[in-house]
Length: 546
Ligand code: SF4
Ligand code: SF4
Image 1 (cartoon, rainbow, N blue to C red):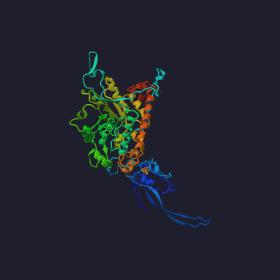
Image 2: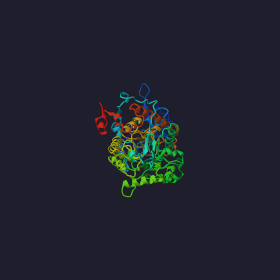
Image 3: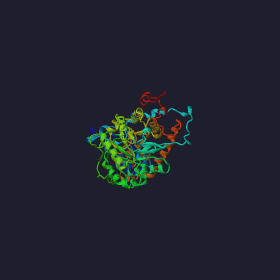
Image 4: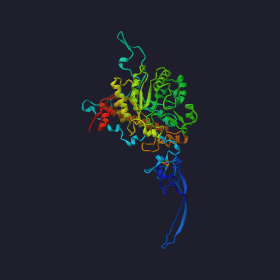
């Protein structure tokens, strides 16, 4: 018998254990083929049994060799609980079960490297969400007529671009006629839910295509002006040179990946993009730049980004001359100049203790070049990140959005730089309710990312299931570039799921707008919200009820 040492890893140290029933298993091998993490393997088990079947003891020994499925004792090939084995097993012979005795968090730092995982943080499982403690408590029906959500015409639009106050509009009145005497900053009025920035590279080509397909479908078939952000990493030239570019927000982040192609395509663009989004930071890992592991840098990603196969790390900030303010200013000016001041340029930052100062600085800028402030909270994220950043850095989005809005109100400048909030919108499945509450608290709109991949078939969750988006082994074909795995994703069905969700979201938004009597997006209507939590009521300045 082999000697067991204390430091040996056993299956009981891993976060998930495989429950396997030899009697039900017909050895088809589906589970082993489906497991992208190589967490299980077929092995031959030697079995010996001594039995006596007669009236008198007459023991005989029987030996057999049985093929079984076994879980590996491996930290690097540990089961992620994805459930693909269970899904493909025709006999319900195998399934993963959560292991409460796991020591994985202690063992996974072997080799001295920090733990990485797909972007989901533990905040939501540890604390109830603020948004779930808020309800819509002001019902117009009681005081004045509510609207009919089924038949009333609603104007569900939000600005992307700098909105000038009436006193600053470049208008002159001559002979009783109003004339435009100067340039207006570009503003696009779009649906108040943006498909957030997940790059080609982070997503598989099929997943990215499914989101673009859903975007185009919602616009062209349902007249919903939903916009999609490209994410850092560029776009296919065909899309850059197509009419559908008008549905896209081009993102530029600190690695500037993919911008070579975008800049070269500018002269051939038939239409302008919907906007430019300068990414400074992201909510799931504030202070860290982007990270695309080499395993996901497939040949098409290398071509689009113009890079070799290597870990692609974006720096934590845009490299400027002397200060962040200066480099951001420079970025704004170059982006505005590149598109001849026709395309609104916005900025995306991680929510942090300093977000309000940044927002105020942008509002004070005399050139009025910032066309939107995107704040990304702690509960979002889809890409690869260090676990320590995911679990221990960041800021929740609700109070931060509210602080920015109230600060603008105090200065009489609300609405001038549209506020867009993201990070956990739709976390519990109801993005319409989350969006509505965020809007009532002061956001002009919200952005969603993780929800989209869940609609496409991602089985990861906030309780440690899968979340292996950083490994290139996504079992759902969403966050991988392995052609065999990418085949698992049905583009049309993935796009259809997104479209159907958005149609339902649109109806649900109306169901909330109608009772409070708003036919346009109720930005800042915090009088519509109540909470039974005193601390939340005080922090967000909304009505406490009990
Ligand atoms: S649950 Fe997923 S990772 Fe675990 S053994 Fe099954 S297929 Fe492999
Ligand atoms: S996208 Fe893929 S790898 Fe990431 S959590 Fe979902 S199923 Fe797992």
